[in-house]
Image 1 (tube, rainbow, N blue to C red):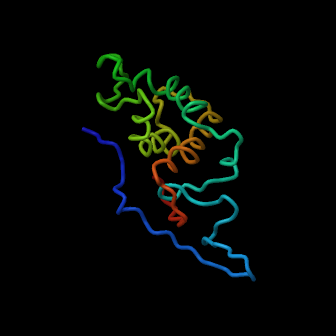
Image 2: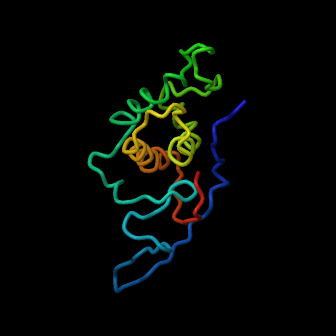
Length: 153
């Protein structure tokens, strides 16, 4: 049975920061990082889109997108023969379910683009979905990493 991809707290990589003193001003420097160009999870760069106002959240974006694109197959309320091959137990019925499966959701919908399997997600929606996961979900999971490894979560 598949399980959520959660990393134990001790498995997170330490971040490499530099400190620059200019008179009484202290600047923290991250290699290759600019304003809001830090990295989430295992190497997904955050761009200025994370500065959106209001930011994308589960309530104003994620719940609706998951409801339209994922829950028709990934819900405990959907019977086995109607799940479109979605494995039993991989359900996104609430925010905690989404948090538990966030890394796999990102890989399948944004990186590999294999979900939803019949298509249906416009490229603009996929971009917004990735932004929401990178800018809202991963930081809430404590997956903020200032070290760019170039790997996907």
